[in-house]
Image (cartoon, rainbow, N blue to C red; front, side, top):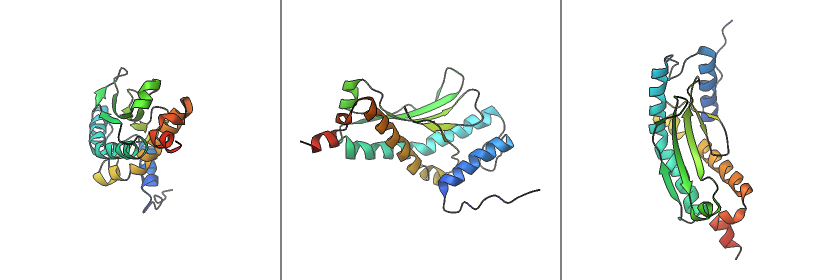
Length: 174
């Protein structure tokens, strides 16, 4: 019995999740489920990182400008090989109060573990969103997810220390 795919029109977060689950179902990865080899999947990952880069920086810059009053530093690693022979790329936002308390920076991490079927997104403290980006439009549609990861990461970092690591909040009460 064959059923039609769900109508996800206008729901990019659901479209990404359906692509992710279809990969698991079909044992493939890529636009149209066209890739089965590790090398091909790594090429897709490298392209996904390239497509996500401006949006990851945009989201971190938003947080820096509004909550850290422009005192933060955004850094990106580019794609690198991991110890488990996988691939990873990260974007981080650090700021003076965070560095002083020696907690992790806000992190957006794209990773494709050595034994994984396909890649994922995560934060330093927030874990595992699907990463199935193959077009510029799909990358742009990830901005709300990137914002959610950064929001959750910052919340957890404040929980590790306190609200005073967020200059816009700490200074507003004075």
